[in-house]
Length: 212
Image (tube, rainbow, N blue to C red; front, top):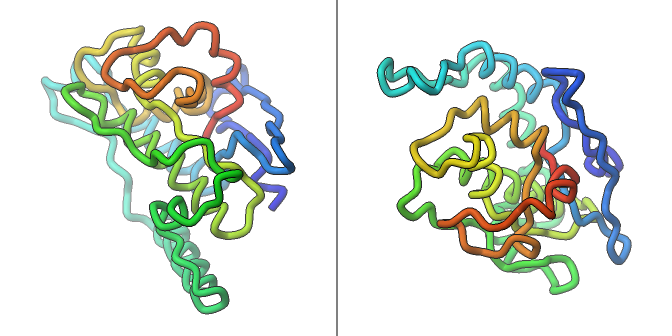
């Protein structure tokens, strides 16, 4: 499971790469992270090339689209086969909410898996947060020594917009934020996802919770 413990951002810009070491607590990794792989690299490249300027988003109606190509089909097949193998061997359900329900107290910082978006146009930020947390739980189900830590999705989402909470955000910008800004755990910034909390003291901590 060592590869799941290496926090390696995507390489879309070498100068923005952030190196972060695992945070170990009681022998487990606290800052769980989606691992970098060839699929993620290819998908991000496609998203970045297909993205449009935010100012023209509502005028054109264009949004980055994930192509249902061979790379995606291969990755999806691998995930299905892995989940089937786990179920056959250990009768383990890898659905994230089921994993969270069965985690002992010492393996989680929170019982929260997702936040309600409320009245903000923060769907991309909340999608990123849910993906980050869900993947961490699935890695735990597969045997990774991690501690589940819920993140407040409104913070990184707002930072990518220059601090604004008005309007939406593109998938490509959120992907960049996940790899440069990182994520803000709720135990640091609280659970209010309708107002951006005071996050400045935790900028360095957020970089340790990056996702690929």
